[in-house]
Image 1 (cartoon, rainbow, N blue to C red):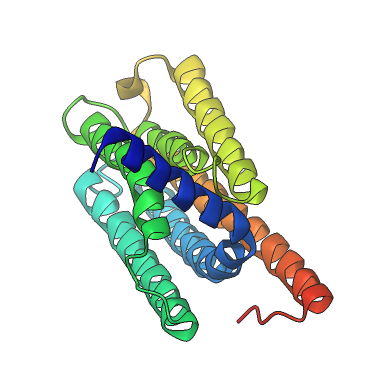
Image 2: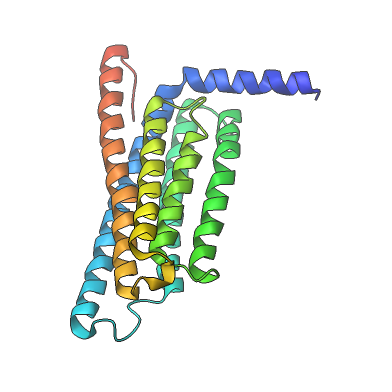
Length: 231
């Protein structure tokens, strides 16, 4: 395939995605609500567990080892991703489209680099560079926001707004952590863990719930106007 043919194919895919922006909202709001609810519940559980331990023995020992904290949130990511895959698969079968459609492939090519970079940078910051889970959580939020913004050329504006919210919130959190504590190693383990859980619960939890509720309501209003099925 020549470069001109590739460019024409990319334009065709982008045009198709822009025309079907309502469909992409209808798919994403369910996963956003599920992921947001899961993040809030998980952050609240971890926050409560850390608070009880600190009340019992202060900073006498490690509240939770960093690898365990990372693993817990990675499992939550996998579960949420699995739900999203099921929703996309169900929608594809109902519409008679292939699961790995040109649109999905184009979206994955846009999202994958910042997501992979964020995962590696966040984990590396925590495990190999002497940083804390609070800084790692902020890095995850920043790179997730960049991943969403990478789709703004063909995704609905609501996705871009969520991306900007994530990017700005993550940058603000990282800036506050650095300003108040200087080198990340200066943050007490318990404080860092509580801060990290607040960041994860707020950004990946509350932001996704607000986004999901707003998009679901918008999708229903559009469905009433057009007679389309949003399920």
